Amino acid sequence: MPFEIHPETPKEGKLISEVFPAANVEKMFANLRNTGKLYDIDFIGNNLLSNSYLALTAGEFAKEKGEFEEFHEKIFHAYFNEGKDIGDIKVISNIAEGLGLNQEEMIEKLEAGTYDSVLNDTQGTAHQHNIRSTPTFIIDDKYSIVGAQSVETFKEVLLNIEKQ
Image 1 (cartoon, one colour):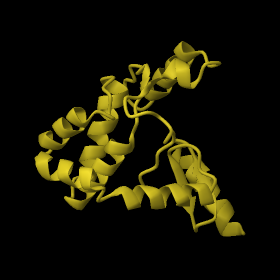
Image 2 (image 1 turned 90 degrees about the vertical axis):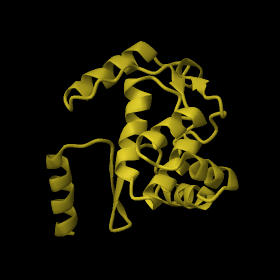
Image 3 (image 1 turned 90 degrees about the horizontal axis):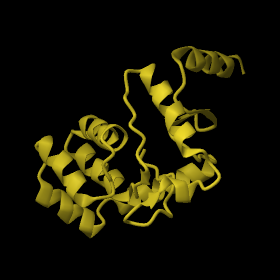
């Protein structure tokens, strides 16, 4: 489900150092890079926290066209590996075009608010389940696994749920 972690982020984005003033941003990026290496992901450390609203709603357009997985992967790569602002409609449009999606149709639907209710609904679901980060996996509408976890962790949690 599309979920905005920081819906208060302005359209132009905000510097990570301003969003997390007490954090050691370089250490945060170093941890992200080290974790990414385990999965062959090269995080560059984007200094901009993008407003993800347009990217998430564009993802709903891609889902409608059967291209969600590819779109999601390209948006992720653009932000984390290339340092692009995924709140910029030009960045989003270029990704859509690269997947063969109709840019004009996508922009029309985004401007018309076609997918706004999807984001509003998932924000409500996230609030209901006290979700504050992604990924978060909800099981049976009452259990959650937070963060990128190992297969072993999923197995352990699922076995514990089964025992209940």
